[in-house]
Length: 259
Image (cartoon, rainbow, N blue to C red; front, side, top):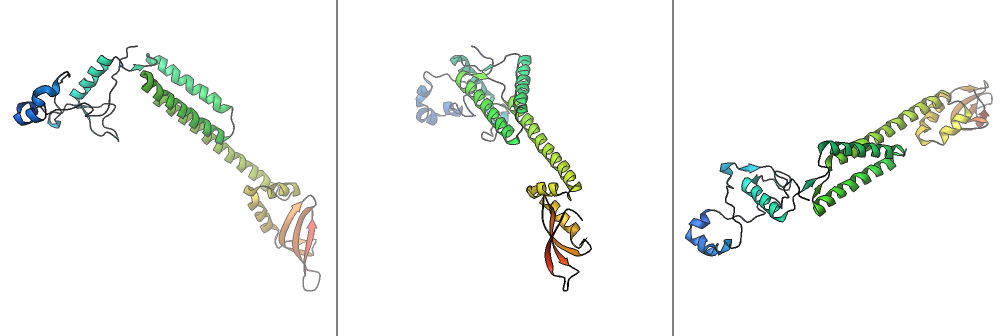
């Protein structure tokens, strides 16, 4: 299949460059170019690579982190010539822009349906990483193996945005649920059943401390001054209290279903 895009062989200076003055100067002509034998059976392109002439352009292997230099126009022409001779021009798949848009949209919709079936943020994060990685390597394999340019950046970005949205929504929803549950438990913290539930949840242990702060110092049955809340269960709350009606106000353990 004949494509429409150049198949660049590499960054700048991938092809051998020979300064023009080597041809004019007898010394390099003799020692470097072997009196012209260097060019035998080779295609020679003549062009400017001096920065003064400003014939430099952006290319896949130019002005990037690994290859900061721009590519000279003559080098782009060399890549064009090699692509034509080898017949391995790159092809964009799908060829029509609207088909690529439909493909990206369909992939995003399908990925959303997939994540919708999972309720755990960890599972959704795992699927997001897995699908993004799979599509990246699929696009890389198609590019390196058969010269096809699949839509890669947009789908991967879409996967990350969709996955991130689901995960953030899960986290926010879980926090709202916990806040509502906390508010409900806080209203009925005096209930022995609620206190039993709270005692089994690490996130709500402070509610028991708040309850303990509320009851410390209160009088139970006009006799026992509560010193500490020991716990709660089906028979009410259990306290450490002072018996104010006995000499010396001794410490004892009392139980009550309420104050």
